[in-house]
Image (cartoon, helix red, strand yellow):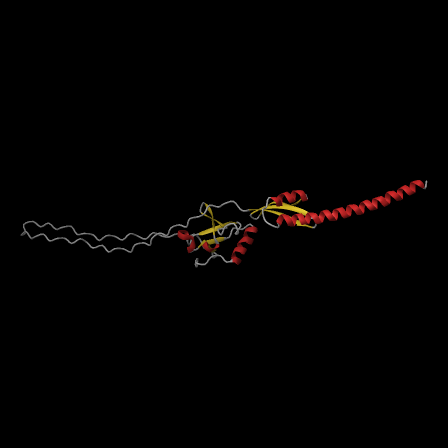
Length: 225
């Protein structure tokens, strides 16, 4: 199983579609994930990649933690969690007991050589587990927009819409823009409001003129009775 490659853009999109369909795709941790490389988990959520590079939330065991696409790869079908069997400890060679003989000439005791125990290969040092950043709140976006003569405000947190675009008064829009200290923004809003004000005054003058004509016509009809 090749767990060295991270998730590609197309694979992330496939996972997003699978989550939307109610499935929880299985992934395997790559070497970039540290000590848990080779383990298998399930993707349960994709957060906003613009807020954090670690936007793929994976459940493995009892944990649910975010990872970056480089830490993960698509798990092949039939893959289960890999269990590493412990290696048996090498047995030490037995040391023969000294022999005792009665009624034999005393022989200088020979120094017993210590049994040589071959040094086994040291296991590789455990790689430190990659520190997992705590999952923070998703970003909040508030949008003030102008189109077709109306000002609207919308709010969104991550991929969730908190408030759909709703209409606000021009005066409220001007107050919101006054809070943004960016050169040119407030001037642009005031120019839009000035244009709308001029058009409204022209329309009001036209309606007044039409109303005056209608009242004059009505007066003539009353005199004709």
